[in-house]
Image (cartoon, rainbow, N blue to C red):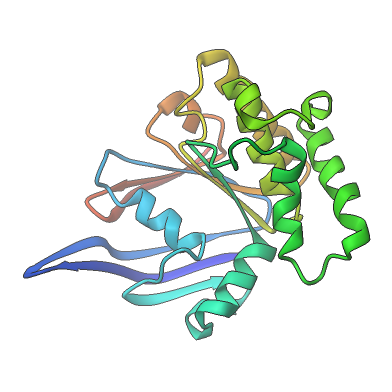
Length: 225
């Protein structure tokens, strides 16, 4: 599914050149559950942005489902991102004062392969999959943190993406809701969903079956459990 070849990412700020990623290589197969870990500044969030097609590498190649993403323009990348990648963020990033149902429907409205008549049905299935059907008409500000994260997972699932990316998905949750969130990821992975999480928490990384450890923009270990 994913092939990363000698990825380098540099940022230029006036006269200062910062190398965030320095020669990254790895492959991720369909159905893997991978944690990317490392201290702050290790490059893991930069790597996540490239995997999610939110940023481009300075050098190197990123293949997603055998597609060389370096050949895509911004519009093509946006469409590929909508159809192939589901995002889950630490801050949930739900639309405020909007129902959970409308939040989950949103990605479908930008997918040209989805028929308008199917949008409500597919949104309902995604909400049911994370166990908050009874809250679907509530506004985001009426939900607990755990419920908001479940809604964010439903939104990420709704387009049936090849890949789920979760950036510190439990960072704003208590222990109970963190465990429930990770149990959802585990169940999705058992059903064949490819999942990559970025986390600095060892107990959260332990849910994954593979741990790519980063430091100073490089991979220092790649452990399969």
